[in-house]
Length: 270
Ligand code: MLT
Image (spheres, rainbow, N blue to C red):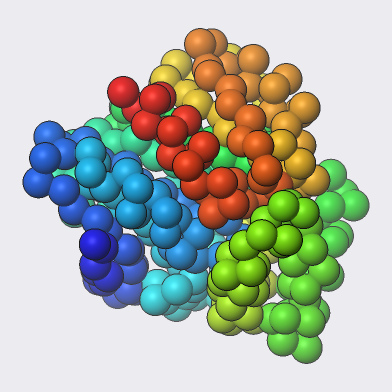
């Protein structure tokens, strides 16, 4: 069972998490960072399936879920500082494992850059280390403007068809429905802030050989957004990193194939 927790952040903002707390966790805490434009429900099968061994904390980033946006803009570096604030308050100041999916992976890399000594392990899921080229940046700015002018769904609908594998769409209608609901519930101002933040994100390609934190890279077998073939190449630049491909899964592997995803994560954390 998991609980909703809301904490007053340093700027008077609300930071919300969904947490499954386990007495037998022996201080092992796993923080989870969702992708765009989603929320903590991306991790529902990890909150259930991994909480026998860990405190599992699924963060809602600024403007997503019950976390407030407060200011119209943020950077991914600031989102990583929010994670550090939550670590200090929810993990008893202990080191954590941090998993991030796609945008959450970009934030996890920012966390590593600023707070590597607080990490026991880094799990980069369905993500990529590079920054955007000019085309991708222009696409993000267009989506931000469309969300503000026409609403969230008009802006994000073209993404919807890329998130789930054919198998998931055919066999898990409840997952498809949940993803649509999460996307529709994000406020236009958050869509805009997140797209602007991702357009300005740091390029981590050159940093990969400097990552000495134990790292697991997870890819979805048919992910068109963060292709598995590319994941196999960039993960090899991180010394000692493990790389796992999740079958029957596109961009949202923790929801699409939770058994394979949880097994990969549990085996890495052990
Ligand atoms: C995500 O799933 O977080 C997005 O695909 C990230 C992005 O737009 O680069």
